[in-house]
Length: 195
Image 1 (cartoon, one colour):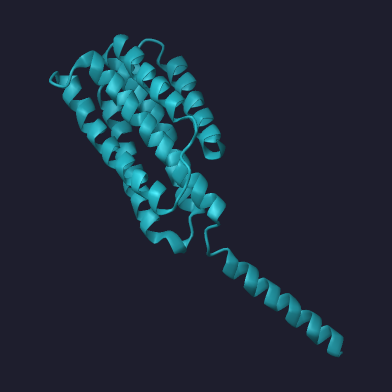
Image 2 (tube, rainbow, N blue to C red):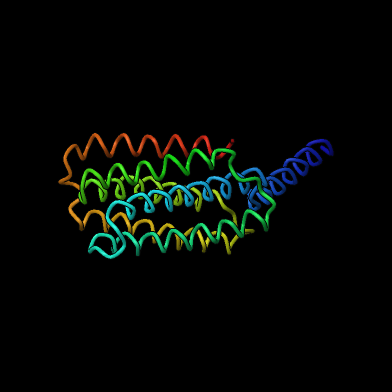
């Protein structure tokens, strides 16, 4: 009888301990979140830089893109702080995201305003979903980071909606372009978490 009681108590302690440990975000998850978000926001600033280089800041579409670029700059500034605060190594692929982001922004802008907005819609769709997944991963020990990511997710979804409002879906080859850009974003996310 004593054995059964001790065995049950040991199982209860394990259960309590394991449920408690689920309330803490592991360092590995925190590191991946901050690294990939830093990389993604950096890439987003470069996409908008490429589009502004083609359209200019003072055109109607340029002003719209500048508004989104300013928000992305706020995001990258925050993740620059978090990289330092948590002593997390940024992705080694920042030079690649620098070139790839600018090239994606400039090339879609060269195809026209609708194509540039289609790029925005595709990128921001993936980023909005990605941020939501991170919010589900983060535990209560990082409430400030959850607030930050929640705000940034809302900004990204606003950018997505701006793209839709600017007729992105009627860009030539919209479906194919969107799928290619979404695939590229998801691949960049997967790589940047680790490298």
